Length: 151
Image (cartoon, rainbow, N blue to C red):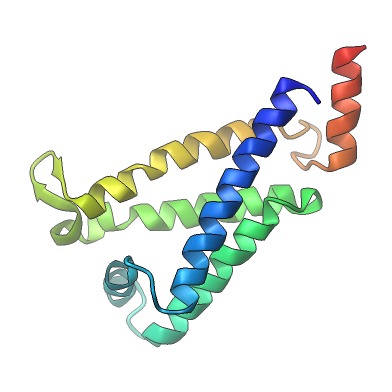
């Protein structure tokens, strides 16, 4: 296994753990982010039932997490993750009372959200490593790439 493949798997595992963990906490209404999520929901989709949304949002996060393990669906997983991360950045603009203490000073929630920039960077790296012809990857292709890189 090449260093690049090992790095990609480490990132995929890290993404998976985070998304599954956060998703499960939302599904069982035990997430510390619940009030923020529901306030954002009220601002953007006020017609959606809050508890139903929270559960479905948690299911989506769990599915994203498992998607990082299924090589056949990496392209779709990366795209859905990108849009999910964009949505999680919305409170910075739409809910400043939650995310800013003063001009240029983020609250704890704001800092938590701003750290998603690191997730964007990791996701970008994974995306760029997909084969250029389809931007879709599989375990077989990863091993073939490793074999051509080594020999």
